[in-house]
Image (cartoon, rainbow, N blue to C red; front, top):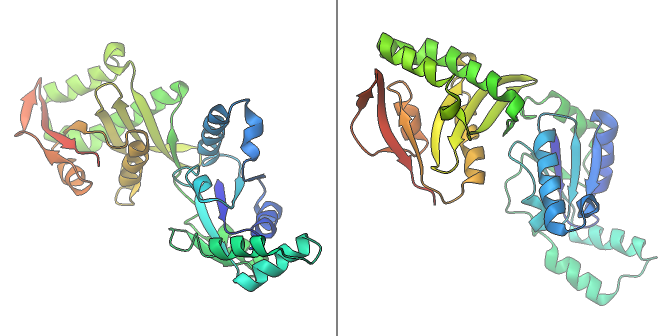
Amino acid sequence: MVFGIIGENCSGKSTLAEKIKETLGGEITTGKDYLRMAKSESEAVFIFKEKLRRAVSGDNIIYVIAEPEQVKLLPDGAIKILVTADLETIKERFAARMHGKLPGPVALMLERKHGMFDSGEYDYRFDGVKGDAKSFCEVLKRDKRDNPFPIRRLSEDERQTALDLAWVVFSEYESPDYSQEGTEEFRKCLHDEEYLSGLNYYGAFDEEKLIGEIAIRPDRKHICFFFVDGRYHRRGIGTRMFRRLLEDYSGETITLNSSPYGLPFYKAIGFVPTDEEKTVNGIRFTPMKYEGK
């Protein structure tokens, strides 16, 4: 799990981060500590973002953030916590760090930055002056919003698990709308290495279990597979997987061929039909596209 602890200098972020580590376990990273991961900043950023993405469904990382640009490093599925404090308390704490004296330019800087995170979207807000960090950590432990279904890119080793899930969900929900020819055609494509080659897969997890997957052909921006385990339908997982995919294809036009069963869902997330329903080799589908913004 990834916790983004976001707030101004001396707001109480580090204190909360230490309490989360003590209560829930994990590794604390602050600000630009990630620069130690590589010689160039661009490479370090890439490595750190990948580490955070893996941590969404792995060991805890507690990332302490004091600059807006660092918020953008947080992956989909991270728990964002805004830590707040009034300006006078921030000044007092900052002065204590400087042996009791707060230079005028520093005071002006703190005033200018005060409230700079307030308009963002957060999962939690914590009062860094009056808040009870121990009780807050207990809330994090109990709350099912703790990212029960994290989403990340799948490795090549996980591809077969994704294909197995596709067949199970297809057989239960989509095959009834197809002829025997169509069902067999879909089964064959799950074993066609030429068709499967080059796809990028994303998956949603319930702990270690894959419960949803989406696969896109990156050169054509075409989604080939999009399935969620039936026991997890209507819980926003498909929508979240698609939003995660859009992070990597921002502004692109994305296409797919919708089954009759999936048509209402795809319309709901922004796809529009580009032609009438067709049937090819027994496969019924409606061509659709999503216009990136």
